[in-house]
Image (spheres, rainbow, N blue to C red):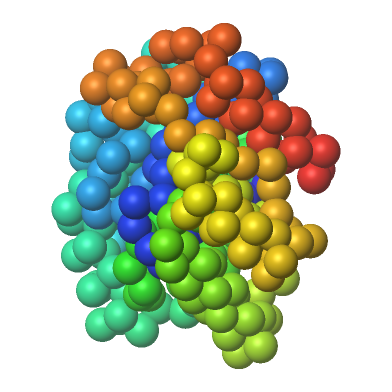
Length: 249
């Protein structure tokens, strides 16, 4: 299963979710490939690695998978990293008028040859060709959404993009769910936003991930939440998200 983690609004915990979900699936015995389609290249940072032009090399330089896929020091967790050249890849795809299926056709042979159970795509918050290709390549889309003011705008934008891909490009995938992040039941804003999300996206709304200082510390330490503090509430919440993913097939 290919899962895109996407929101057209930054600062919603998208990369944090992608990395911790990937490691959580690995800890449940799955083989996972995490591909960073965001030019910020922050998946590498959270995993304690150096950003590199993996996505660019896969899509533009067309290097074979063995030259772009990297192992990590977590068994069965592999990565295709990103950096600023990922933005160049988007420009090239536009100039070349690459079909919407281009990225999916690059990922399918990797999945088939290396036996991955899941491929997770961390996408850029900006709207563009590369994000749309990553969305079209996915079987499911997970939408993290911070529980703060105007947070629902990013969700509506992604849903609108998915509807366009469905109607114009016959995208066959589905929305996996909307994941509330940075939730804090003490603040009115957070509770109000959560209630708003519930009323607007009730059938898609997933259990929230609470605001936690330890999640910021993970990036500094180059570790996932399961490595830094597996007994933390945030770790339990991401573990529950893993349960939901596994149940989805």
